[in-house]
Length: 207
Image 1 (cartoon, rainbow, N blue to C red):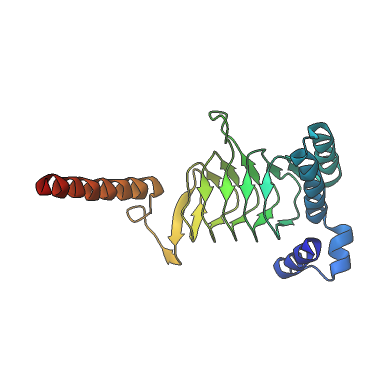
Image 2: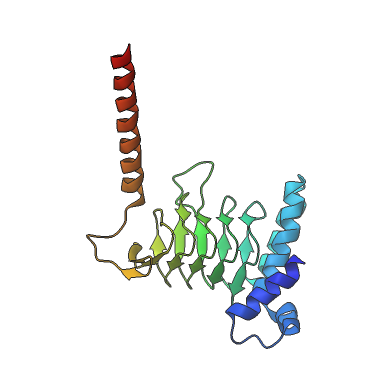
């Protein structure tokens, strides 16, 4: 049962949790997720008004605002929770952990996909803002009060305003060796173009 596995995730992530019953009855983050799951079901079945009504009721009771159109994976843990905002096109993978005051929002410059995508096992610290339609890779960590405005590769730690990567695959980084996912992608495309040009040249030679 998914509710049971989510409660177990709370036990794993919160050392103050004393029992499953306490989590079920008293944890506003869990209650916010339950409201979201129900609202999301109505949203997917084209009952948008009921979905928004439920999400607003959940916001009023828990202090956590999750748009019913958002996509959230399994075992999400919302620790403390008050002040969290998750936008309509946000996507959250499995086993993620969000602390109070987190915003998964937009910059106001984008249309369509406007909000971030979190991979699996991502932690976002209290007060952090992740803004824009990019991905935060699996197993990455966003430090408290950081403002992240660009893509984050997997297995990274991001700190600061604006956010910068300070640790990658467990190793500390300086400004020179910080990975740039856009530059990496451009490099991959350039390599692919070179390979295709070589194939074309070989084909022309054979002709």
